[in-house]
Length: 324
Image (cartoon, rainbow, N blue to C red; front, side, top):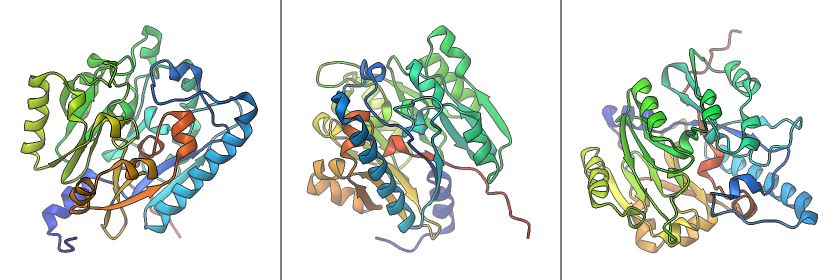
């Protein structure tokens, strides 16, 4: 690992990845029939296992939080409320994103049950410690059955202001382009399918953009023109392409996120299942640029159908200075 970083590179790192994240500790966790309709990763649980599954999920959650903190990453843990049962509250990145300049955006969610996760009280809690200047709300689109599920639907290269998204029931192209216009991102829109030719429901299960690399499942993209547009975008932004297979996607190898600590060391966060699915050469490619942190998340992956990336909402907000 190179330790010497010039100022320009430092700026690029700071603008691309953050050292502060929000995670929601679930009050309830479980299989959601509604999201399973278009999330091929979920598996149904037996009723009598519900309590055990919930406790295991909380344990996996706390263990990932501890690991991030151990490496110097700030984790703002929000406790999920028990007012309504929200089986997917552990995945906040679908309903909210936090951007430079104090911008908060909330999104329209495909599953009716998941809409209750979108809580103003959570944003207010973050707003007590971080500066929030403006708020963009897309949730009114739910009434028209139009969806865009945050950084599940979109992969943001924040430094180069490029947003990548693959088409699915949960990711509407017009809304995606509207987001890009408002936030001054260049949109890159494409189609990606799994082994059964079913559209991949979230872009963040098949790709991850880091500071100097991108992890992506190229075989899921059938259209040559779209493939070339992606490759040309990665080339222009100087990113090494680390290719993963559809089989690795099914083990959550696409569901990763690069973060940094306050000293500027960067890490690629993933589940242990994702890590174990990687081949030696892929690990070497990644480790040229960053250090891997992996944590076992079997319960969350099996019943929730999401992994490490889905659990993390990045905070690109400025901390409010404390007055003594």
